[in-house]
Image 1: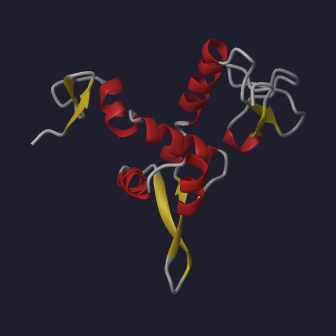
Image 2: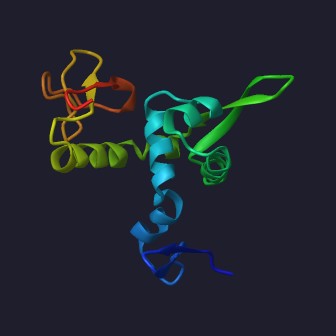
Image 3: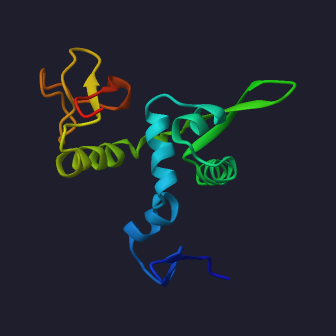
Length: 158
């Protein structure tokens, strides 16, 4: 049975098996608001369930569902960091890290179009404090940047 979600009085499918399209297939995995925000938080260094919950204000059952799905899809791996009781961290896999350019592109696009007071968060190069550009290089020194080269800092629109 196909899962559906109500939206504006119509019913939209949550799966796109009738479409031979990589965008549609990717949306089946990451095309949900909470999923993208969980990924954003993971790129900011969040790893533990309670920290995701606190950072996002997401309901625990929704977070459990999304983290389970992200683990099942191979974007995160669950790593135990404590016994009695068992507690786990959620660490990005290589497949998950590969989404960094997509998440950063959305962030930069949102900054251009929906941040009238300036970006709420600036993604800064750890090496020289320059800003990430839409070409994924530092605007100051020109170095190519990846998720391990940057940190999120409060911006002028914070």
